[in-house]
Image 1 (cartoon, helix red, strand yellow):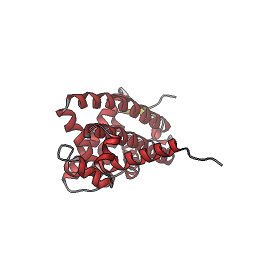
Image 2 (image 1 turned 180 degrees about the horizontal axis):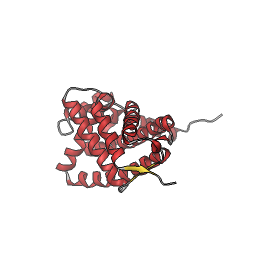
Image 3 (image 1 turned 30 degrees about the vertical axis):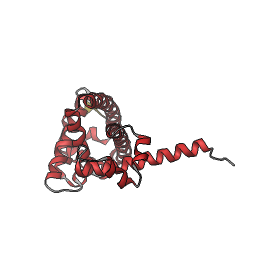
Image 4 (image 1 turned 60 degrees about the vertical axis):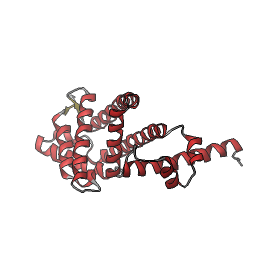
Amino acid sequence: MSHTSPVEAASSRRQKTRERLLDAAYEVFAEIGVDAAPVELITERAGFTRGAFYSNFESKNELFVALAERENAQRLAQLQVGLDTVTPTTGGNLSSMSTATRLEAVSELVAQFLKLQGDDRTWCLIEAEFRIQALRNPEFGSYLMQHRSAMEEQLAAVVSAALANFGQRFIVDPIVAVRLLISAYQSTTERSVLLGSTTPTASDPDLHKVIASIVTLFTEPIPD
């Protein structure tokens, strides 16, 4: 029978406290923005005191960076799960389809995939905060660009592997293709949110078509 040591128990409690603070920050930053969000509101939302906050984070900026790291990692994992889920649907049949049929099939796959993703409206607001804070704060901007570059490489590898399962490959640098997909995703999602949607990626047919069009336009069958 295994027992949890006092050190392990303390570490577990600390991690749970950090996660609750990050969860609260995610909500508060989306509601009123990073600059307007006082530490007291975040700790109150999490059910803690200021002392608990400063035991885990030196500043609100450090909390924001930790939130960026957590959320981007979670979304990369969600993307992988989504791709793994929809891949068996079609397998390697895309290569034998006409362009029109392939576009329709890819659009359906994109729709299935996007339904598996998280709270799109809140994430859209958080992403907007990431961008505006990066533009205002050179230090955070430098961090965000380094983090974004690393994530683009991960995304390119994940998406390229998924395409290979369908017998497809990018005809441009995968990093360039991923940047196009990210830009299309962000701009179309923001448009849906501005139009009042609470689930923009899951319910917006325009987004499905845009993503599918980019994938279809910038891919080709892998030669035998």
